[in-house]
Structures are given as C-alpha cells and as structure tokens.
Image (cartoon, rainbow, N blue to C red; front, side, top):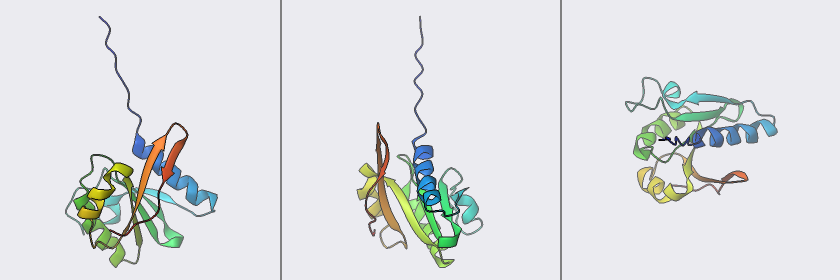
Length: 129
C-alpha cells in the first residue's frame, strides 16, 4: 500500500516574496516581521503567525492575510499601526474581499486583493473597507 502525501505550497510566503520584490525593485528597504512584533503589548489577539512587510522609509506596513485568517483580529493591529503613523495595507485572498470589507469596516487601512496562477502572484486595486 502506498501513501500519497500532497504538499501544499506556502501561498503566504509567495505573496510576501512578491511584495518584497516589488519594493526592492523600487530600491526600497523592506523587512518581513510578524505582526505581533509590530504591535507588541498593544493588541490582545495572537498575530504571531501573520506576516507583515514593512517599508520603513515609506511608513507602509503590508499585512499578508491568508485563507484561514480571522480578519476581524487584524482591525486592532491596523488601528495601533495607524496611530503610530503607518499606512496599513491588508493583502487579502481575492475570494475573501467581501469578508474583509465586513471585518475591517472603518479600520484605518486599505485592502488589496491577491490571487495566483501558474505565472505567479497578482495584485488587484486598493480598496477602502
């Protein structure tokens, strides 16, 4: 009997890499940081598994949301970061844009849908929740 083990690619890592590549192509310095480190002590939700790409010189934080993420827990992080002078973009799987609008309504951030195909990761237009 053979057992087939299917590996699923780490989609968030590909999205994060695409964001990093976009900034580095513009010669911006960026850093990947868990969101929990950015909001340490200010937000009760555990955000240690959620990655952010930080472009410090531009004061932009891009939070990479995945399929299974509870989007409502990102709202306090957006409020905290915006209060510290950061522009916050939450990158959302394309099919979750409706959920994101409901979960992050009035949060100080922008939403940007992402999707992927055999050619790579793609990003949609910025939206206001």
